[in-house]
Image (cartoon, rainbow over all chains, first blue to last red; front, side, top):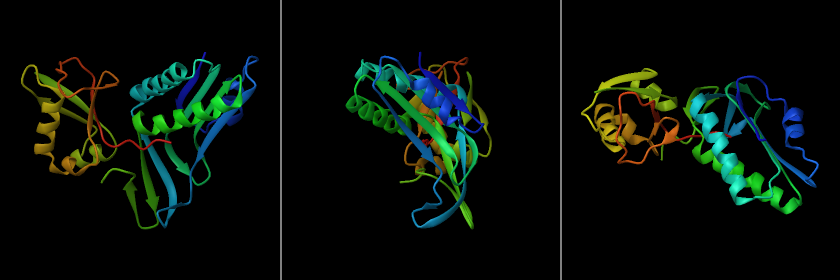
Length: 139
Length: 80
């Protein structure tokens, strides 16, 4: 059973990794996305993440299902995304997958984070010392 | 028919509210709705992308909208 969540509270990384464990897996592979202090040369003060919660949760589940179709050997998927105001160093997203062998776990983990960034309705506004910008909004 | 459109991120800021009620012809398509909204709020046309979501799924342009649909405007996403 996959562990999929959208939360406005700090992510419990250890719990997400634990949720991805499986006795049938020899590999747990995780990606942990965190808030960086610079963006394109500007100092970032904090980030504001806005979500469309019901659709975001639905699309997170879809991403996990698509990964399961592409990698049938996937045992567990944990996928947790945070929204709200985040400070530098805060954890934004955790993707953790387990598979019998490690090569599939790297590929599935990368697929999930890359696809999440394309389809899940979550928006990011960067706050600088002198203003704010919605990330990727304009060409 | 009357449609309620949920707005997020930069689309919410451009329109100035988080929900928009608009009158639309019966059978209005997702693409037709986008065209109407871009005409009414030209700054929406400057975005890198703009999608319509219906009932938590991305809508194809020719999808017909209905009054009871949960409709949202999806500006370029930036999760992760």
